[in-house]
Amino acid sequence: MTARAVETTAVAAFGTLFGSVFGRFVGDLVDLQTELTVAGGVIGGLNGAIGGWRRTYDWSCSNGPIAFTLDSTWALPMTAAGLVANGYGLATWKRSGYLADLSERQNRHVYRKGLVFRKGFAATIGNVIDGARDVERPRRRRLVNDHENVHVWQGRWFGIFYPVLFGGWFLFGSGAGVVVWLARGRKDPLGKTVETVGYYMNPYEWWAYSRDDHWRPQGMVDGVGWTRPWVMPLATARALRAGGEPDAQ
Image (cartoon, rainbow, N blue to C red; front, side):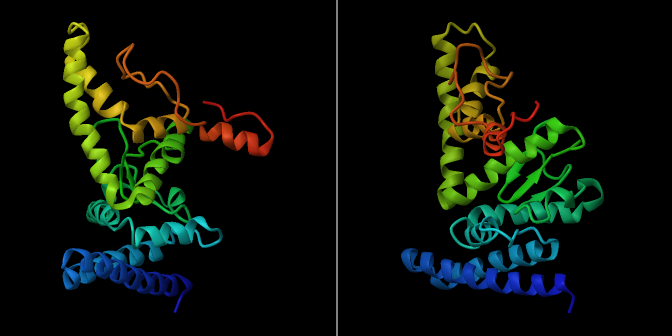
């Protein structure tokens, strides 16, 4: 067997094992032991097989094992969503444009196109980043590494709560945006105000835009939302570790 085949088999096997154990644990809590054991094993196994074949997990440092373990357990719902995105990418591989150089040993899958819900915007679905587009441009490449990759890890750390918290903010935030629009005398476009509160002010987006050193985004309504970045930009953090200057914009 080739090294790739060995990695594929091993990662798929461990993904199935981890997913089954976690599915059984959750199944015991909600009286769906058999169903969730099988579902967890299938999701973990498929994710492991794709990740193993593409060699996405970085086994040379702690990030790879941590990413794989979370993808196969706590973050299984997001991993399942990522499998849908990967399935679309595989079904439309000529058009989606899988980017191996941004995926291999990077603990993620990156597509130039793939499933994109808004023109010009990238989309992170589980451990899959779609809409990377012209990554030959430094700014777009940085968007993948310093913004979308933050979302990949948010999904892992927050696991089963991530889609609920992210989606909940979007729904309630959009309603709050209408209230803000009315309170401000309807002086700004309604859609832009709703987007500012429902999307840009989402703590997960604030976090990612701050890491990307791109806060505040141009799409926000002036005078609405957080004024300062939440956390240090990754470019600044890397420069401080290296004892140099932050990366150019």
